[in-house]
Length: 472
Image (cartoon, rainbow, N blue to C red; front, top):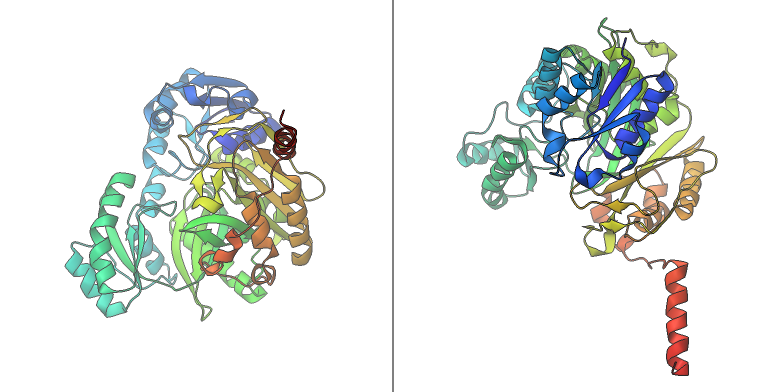
């Protein structure tokens, strides 16, 4: 049985995995670079080891990480998300060294990480896919011919892409000619392979994804869907479970599609099958993420299932604890990605010291965070510093609780996306529960909000004004 796990990640997801380990009675090992010496995951884990001075490369060296796992007596490695989580090399190195990888096989990671292979697998399984190329594009001329056939707008995408990178929408042939080499370059720089393909652009779809769990005995279930339609430049901002936009018939249909997709590739562990729902209520397969998702928390809130603990059990060779008919969803949950960014300044990252932090609480409120008062946010990583998750029995109650929780959450020292989320919640279009991926672009007025100044800043300004008036 797994008794000790090396967490091959950092930040809030590393803290999340450590917590799951503690509840299972499993020892945890954290890794960190010099920039993360004072990070919360280092403080929370049972053991912690420095993996070098470079703030990024240490988290990307699969061989060093597995060597450390072996040297520290770990039975398994959990990759979290980001970094090496969808890199088949880490899974392969773990297999060679006799360390369990908490995730799917390297073969499945490689297959589903390649968007062309994934599309082909879904077509064979009878899963609807967006019309597009069935192989990597050889030239801009081939792209132009295919775009003319399926019609504009189209999407140029990196074949091995993820995280919203390596994607460009083209509304005309001129756009296609302008963006082709850019996407090829982005694909090479970001993912190491300058391979791209083309798909028909589904205009303003709803982005719906389904959480699946599969074990090594061949069992596979879904944990219902999440609505990830509120996003900016293909980066998710708010996630909701279940989607307030689906009927029960649609919910049942997409759940079965996701399980069929997972079974088609013999998927083992936790994964997410992502779909687009167009304006004619047609679902299309988009991609499969072969890892834990940032937004797994909302699924946990509506089902009561600890997905990270299930990942560990599955990696240990145990069968799923649940059958599909055992899974129920209760109420609604919403997750806000709290990013250290300035929404009023094109979402520019806002790194620095958190001078004061007040976490929200109360019924139905959960915080997954890696920050604390005095913590210095390094400039080397993703700008997400916390996830605020709110649950309520009704959609209307969820909106009100989320407003209250965002008002309760105070972060001083850096700018965050909190005030922007307050504006979104106040929007009638959002509150109606009817929105799509075009919501953010359609509502630029939501960025026109008054910045709430911390009390100490207000007091300092008043003192300065009084002193100036008195000539002190």
